[in-house]
Length: 99
Image 1 (cartoon, rainbow, N blue to C red):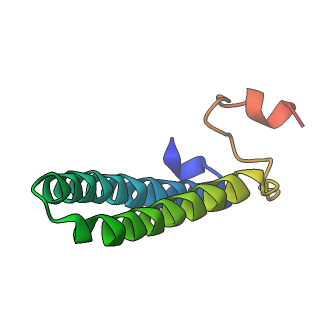
Image 2: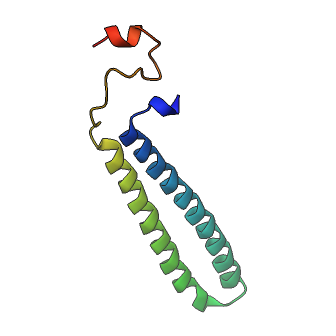
Image 3: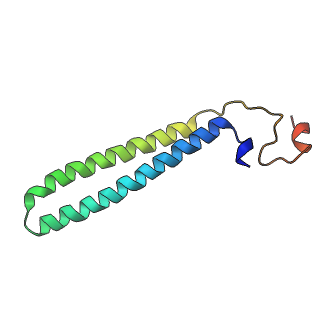
């Protein structure tokens, strides 16, 4: 089924999957940062709150950039591909008669 897919669509799917993995890793890091910063702040180390805020804002900015990248990739027009090849939703001879 994946062998007959459009190569441009396949490349975009890989890019979206990679962006999603990066977002998941960044969000896990941000949750750890929030926990560590809040624990430090509640322990009386008030000087750790501002660097934690800056790092969290940086992680948020990277996640927002990745989201914009995925939206931009999603809006790219489909590249024309070989109409004679059967797509995943077409079967056998029916694919060649539907031009």
